[in-house]
Length: 323
Image 1: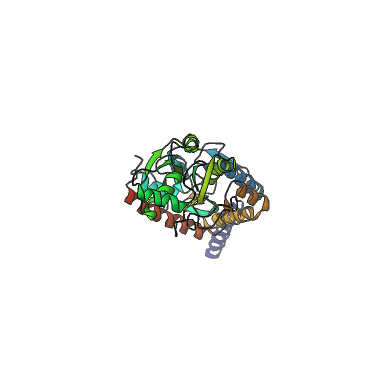
Image 2 (image 1 turned 90 degrees about the vertical axis):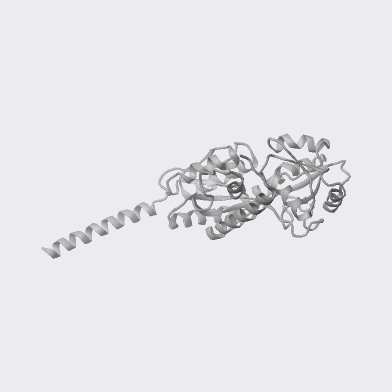
């Protein structure tokens, strides 16, 4: 009797284990939602949709892009943080994910603890630009003018706490200068005033600023990354053009809710690496002024942590707030 009971229990456990294994190995068995914290039509949204298309092909299930714009990505991030960690809700965060914890006093989620890093997608520089008729022809000349005229030079941003703003603040701190911040509601609103010379300079994302440089409306003084951009190789880095050590990149990646099963995380990362290595996808990134950012989940997690700490210090020193 005991042996029969043991046999039944053993068979049941094998059945349950097999069923559980089948469920895990079947991932994905339904559509996946990729949450993007920006409005449709922008460069980041465009890359997100190309990424979703690639994942759909690789995973054999539709990957649906959902735009949840607002609050520098907070709305999208909170939605994902509260979702089930089953691999069917993913988030396409930007550098804002690492910045928001220091900008917003009552953030309803933790950008590190409430998410599982899957992998980086791309990084891109911002670009320091001045009007085409500006007297400044190099980063060194801007720094010299700012030191000679403290609190006189102006810079436009796409809003407080954005990468455009923080690029300029980092520039100020490292160069030991003081400039006037002129915030706008988006880069599109700021560009006309920079082009006309009402504002002395700006640090827009490369996809926004580079077309104006090529059109002859703006002069590029430097890209914010440590290396030159493949999309604009003729433009020196800010570091080599007058401010050694300066380095700032806008980046994007994929995260999921905390406690995502490791096998699902690894599957997603594996397919992501394949997409990032595809020449067509790489060409699309370069056309957007970006560079692929392949790597492991651990590497992307480390980046988020280091960026969160880097911007926490700068934001605290500069007393930047948005609420």
